[in-house]
Amino acid sequence: MTDDTHTPTDSSGTATEYRAMTDGGTDDQARTDGGPPATVPPDDETPTWTERKERRQGLSQLTYQYFERSRREDEDLRAASTYVERDVLGFPTWPHETIRNLAISSFFVGIMLLVSALLPPHFGEPANPGVTPAIILPDWYLYWSFGLLHLDPINPEIAVLGGDKVMSDELYGLVAHGVIFGIIGLVPFLNKGSARRPVEEPFWAALGVAGVIFSVTLGVLAIQNLVPIGLDLLLNLVFLLPVLGGIVTYAVLKTMREGYMYDLNRRYYMLRPPK
Amino acid sequence: MSLKKQDEMDHNAWLKSQDLTVIETAFLTTLIWLDKRLRIVDYLELLETMYYRANLQMPKSHTEQYDLDNKFWYWYPLYSLGSLSILAYLVAAVSGALLGFYYSPSTAGAVAQGDPTAAYDSVIEIMQDVQFGFMLRSIHRWSAQFMVAAVFLHMLRVYFTGSYKEPREVNWILGIVLIGLTLLFGFTGYVLPWKQLSFWAAQIGVEMALATPLVGEWAAQLLFGGFTLGQATLVRMYILHVFILPFVVTALIALHVGIVWVQGIAEPH
Image (cartoon, rainbow over the protein chains, first blue to last red):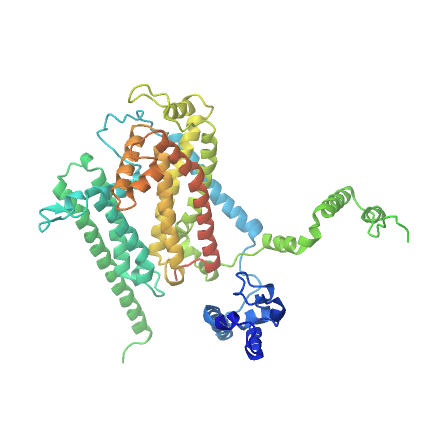
């Protein structure tokens, strides 16, 4: 096409080929006097709906093919399903569900108002850039993050680089945040399948418990100057307690699983005693 | 053919010919008045759909369907944590809008280092002079605490019931983003009273931003308005807290809930 448009006065064969890509417009009339093609294509270059629907090429064709497959899959699944749609599946939104939700909401809002009336917030000194306070702390929900920033004692010093730290202590804390968020974000891509209960997957439940304990121990690390434990011991506890908690959880869940299996087996053999 | 305008559809005459009660007449008059101007009839199908939506029956949950309520009722609070955090968010929004009438984001007024600034004084004024001001600030603070707590517990519930699994990865990621934004909400709000702890929390924030390679200085200037704290920092925290974050977080919450709506609740089985 690019070659042809530079020679607009050539044979009719090229012209029909060219026309086949549009809805059969007025290219011959719209042609300029031998110059290069106009930057803005004339209106009849726009594909018609028929042309669009055919989706002959490229990504649009692949999309179309996949959607066709997907629709067919849906139909097959629906045909194979034994699900029966019943007339009444639940309670009406009004009044049943609405009133229940209103009750829950007003209860919760009431609790919030009650707590804010009973426990008024503390208000401290005005800001003073000249005096560093003895205790710098964020709100409780950022203790874990502040604890990550206190991990500088374990920032590795590389002997090869003459005992220098590869990262500054602050950057080390930031990278720790990235690692934590990254691991949490990866969870659904690593753990798949239909298992839902912690008993079904002791490893992932143990990992979760270890994470929860880790966030608590990091919080304790953040308030280290209020904790009467030496820093070395505290750092060890920060990493050992989560592992310990994880192991205990794993053991407990495995045992529970054995218990379930034992129970199931016992019932089975009570029903069908071995001969 | 006369040039006189013909009114073939004389609705008022039709209305008079009917034998209607006062309420019916009033209703129809209003309807005709509105319809002449807004052509409601074009949207009639939408209205009908909305009418039926209001009487929609929610599908029974797994536990209801198999009559397991007697065994699982004590799990239910864990399944309401998401909506509880939205509720706390709404309470915080309302009380925060009221607080915004009285708060001024300004470090002016401090003669020497450590003097109370205008921002600090306005919070003091809210707590001491404004009618119900102390309660208002208390409500705002506590609803924020409740929201963060509910969001964390919601995440734990989702993790331990495996609700993040295969078709729901996107919502899990979105949830992580929302937790981060919630914490940022809390952080910016913590800075606003410009008390000693606020200042040093912001100081740590600046140091963290500056420690980031490549984009560090740019980020510090964008978020904190410079490398040292001052008026610019306070205003940026304020704009983040009352303008940018509310829009972003509300939109993301809507998306988060919308995806749950489309995909269905992942119930344990």
